[in-house]
Amino acid sequence: MTDDTKTQHEWRNFYGRRHGKTLRESQKAYLSEDLEALRPRGVTFEENPDRAPIDLAKLFGDDRPVWLEIGFGGGEHMVHMAARFPEVGILGCEPFINGVAMLLGKIRAAGATNLCVHPGDVRDLFDVLPNGSVEKVFLLYPDPWPKKRHHRRRFVTPEHLGPLARVMKPGAEFRVATDIPDYVRQTLEEVPLAGFELVAEGCEAWAGWLSTRYEQKALREGRVPHYLTFRRL
Image (tube, rainbow, N blue to C red; front, side, top):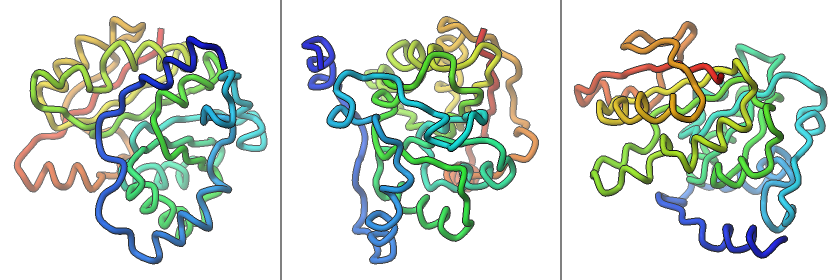
C-alpha cells in the first residue's frame, strides 16, 4: 500500500449506520454461512492493499455483463433483477449489515446464483473495479441527507460520481430513484457534470420495476417517487 492510498483509506469518512436492531438468529446464520461465498475478493484494503483491479470474469465465472446496485437496502430489487436477467452478473454494495442479512435471506430463498455482495462502502469497490467494466448501475432511494449542511454527504457529489463514471462502460445506464425533490434537483445538476447525459425523468417507473420497501414507505407518507435515467458518455 502506498502512503497516499493508506492515508486516503484512513481518512475516508463514512456517514450512516452500519448496524441496526439486533439480528434474528436466522439472519446471523445467513451472515455466518452465506456471506463469505458471495463476497468479492480483493475489495478490502487488507486483501488488496495495492488496490489492483479485480477480475470480474473470475468473480462471476465468465465474461457476462456486470450490473451494480449501490445501497441495496433490503435487497428485494437486486434479487428481482437477478431472477429477470440470469445472464447478467449483479454486484451489490451495502454497508448496513442488517440490510445485508436481509438480502442473504432473499438470495437463499430465491436460489439466485448470479449475485455478489460487498458488505461495505462503495468507494472501496470503486477503487478496484476495472475501467469501463459496469454496464448498468442502480441508485435506489439513497439516504437523502435532508439538512443542507449534509448535502455533501449525498451520493450525487463529485467524490462518488467521478469514480462511478470511471468504472462504467460508455453508453452504460445509470438509474436513480428518489422521493426527495431536492435530491432530484441535485442529481440533475451534478450527474451531467460527471460525464452523463439525461435520458429520461419523471414519475413513471421503469419497465419491470419492483417497488421497494423504501418506496412503499414513501407512498404511505404521501411522497411522490421520481425516476431518472442517465447514459454514460
